Length: 331
Image (cartoon, rainbow, N blue to C red; front, side):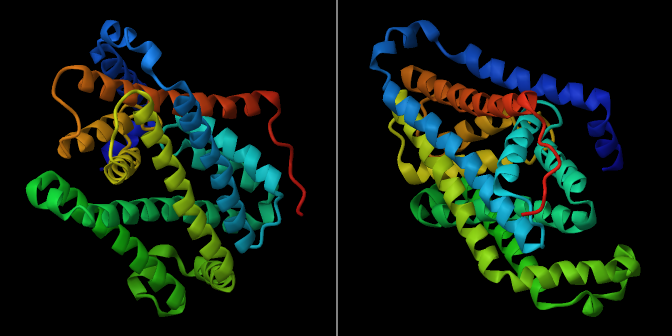
């Protein structure tokens, strides 16, 4: 594990992840029979494509709003417009430079720069933001899979996905409840020593701030569900636009697994891995034919999801080039 972490952080590891991302996306594009699809160009629903693109972009302001609420829960008075700018910049880094956690690293940098006296709270809010999003995503996947009992009984792969999603969401929920209902002073001695006794008062203060802001935390949780719903509807609309009428619930499940797969540190920003996981789960539901026009349309859907993701990430690059956020003043 240490060797893998060291390799992924090295220049060779970064080059490898870029190569995997490029190879996967290029493979999807090369697998599409573009001549066959070219004859159907006029049948594509371009208003739906634009709607799917707009909805995908709406997720980023929602993400900024959630992060801003979590920052305020930790006592940071950074303005909402600052959170939006930094979120867009983080989106660019996440997609192009540092891999799956690049956006978090960028946000952590700006928090530490602009609120040096409260950087522990800012880092905690950023960590909570990441974990909350993932746990909510897994809970959606588990709930949607539970509604598809027939498919679960027929396909072992879907059962494994359900077990993994349920386990991940339960572990996250139980860990959150345990942290909020206990104090570091009552934690096991081995855990306290591993953390360091000198850090326990700071952790206690962070947990107290989180407990006191329970309404804010609930609002952030609700925004998390809204973010994923917007993303799922966007992919569903894009599928309809390319002539692939997917059922909405199955699209939600496939999209949830696809986004969860981006956590794997084997590509840059999850490019290629996200799209491959999306197609794999749709295949488990029997919604994609092995050959023919339907398969080409599914591959085109994957390329479209990638293109929309990259396109909105470029907005973050434009924000970064226009002006790096100046040191923010507390609101």
